[in-house]
Length: 416
Image 1: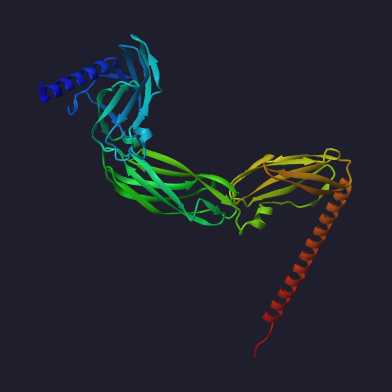
Image 2: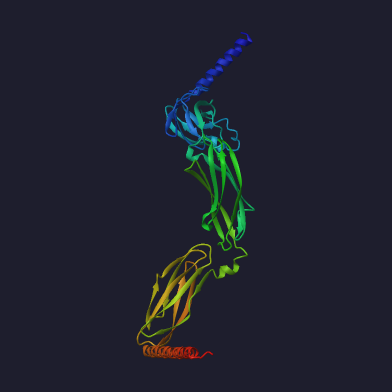
């Protein structure tokens, strides 16, 4: 027997061994996202599964053991992705190892993700089944990678804040945003907005066009943190609007530290002004206007309460005891105090203005005077007013008579 025949026999024996080993396990079917698919011929674009960039692939592999096998493992891979060495967990998954007896059937679940950065093309999903010592059996399934649906065509690929994501109140920061069109169509009039909703600050930039697979970087966003912003963490929303009605949003965070320009204002952010003392006649009512100035950066809700009036009178608040004061504005709540008919003397009571994070109690004074005293004072003023009017009339008559007399004397002169 020559060497050539020996090599042929060895090759046949090896192929037979491989075939026998491969027959220890068989793939009954593969389901991808609930749909069952058959093996595809490599290079033939038939029976394709169309998948979008960024789409999750839930894979179920149904296998049957044709012989007793140990330490079986099933792998799923998408080959040909440029960044697979950096994003291996997206395009590759393996099952746990398990044993099967002859005739056993089992279903193994695997998960892959079509990378957003993957080229739009035809590619193969490869499913391999192997035990510890045997040869692997591989089945391939044709995938057609396409762009995403139109409403998800634009993604925020990256962003950064300068000088950092930690900013003092009263300072400004800039934002750089990188967007990408991963859809199938060019897009016009793309609007990108960076905002801090809680602080009511935002800035926008526009792109005339964003072509398919194009990346654009926008660097002109400038946002200033208000002087009196509360220290803490705030959400930064990066919104991209495109194709008239579509949008996508990415959320980041910044940390605001206390600023130098609002230390004094922070101590007296809410200013309450009210006349501290009023005269009120027994049996009548007087108003105390309570002016609430909100010098903060956000609207605040205030509640006004009154105590210490019940023993000698009654009180009411108008238009309401609860008032919402927008940032940087002032609103007035009127406190009406009515004294009992038999009340007298000086009375001290309290008006309290409270918000969620602060409360201020203000002592007020009502000087009560008897009703008859005020009546006499009123009548005295009325009499004085009448006397004054009479005096003014008399003075007017005297001046008028004097002018009339002077006119008569001039008319009676004789000229020669």
